[in-house]
Image (cartoon, rainbow, N blue to C red; front, top):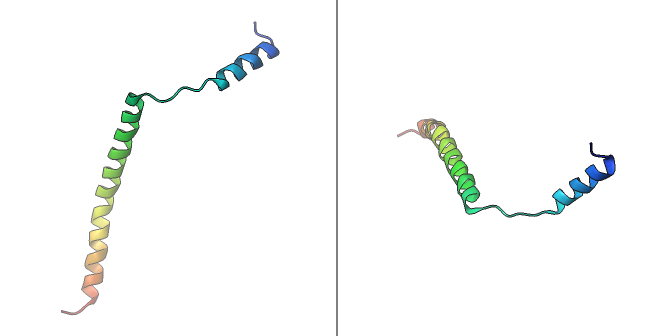
Length: 61
């Protein structure tokens, strides 16, 4: 069983390790951002078009 001192030593050692992201992780992050952006723009496109149509409707002609 670990003592508190041993646990703290292991915790500090794991915090000191710095490892960069791999290219695969960057690819996954980029894919998630792309899908989210497309979804947001698709969801908002109808609302924006409706707002523009309402503004145009206020003007005669």
